[in-house]
Length: 111
Image (cartoon, rainbow, N blue to C red):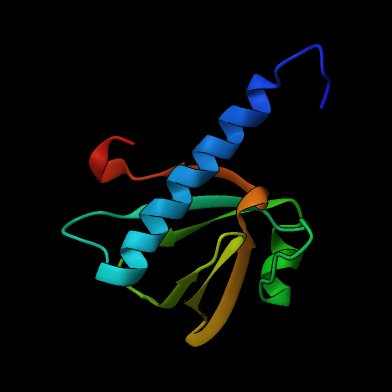
């Protein structure tokens, strides 16, 4: 940290990741209510990201997943989240560190 400056962009990014973490914690505990759906964008090459190989090959830089009706086993830690998603009829685990996030939206809530 630069002792002469406050790193507002880094503080803001950390706060935004905290919002995503809290939303995912609520969804993990209570399920996704009503018509909510979550778009989660992240860098596929970021350290700690785990996605099926074909997905990383198809999206080598960034991908967006959707959490709505067909996701299972959502688990959230302070550093990352993991979830089972269906790709080509097969359930695959996806692990995403919060530091890898590039986008988050819930269109049903205008967020």
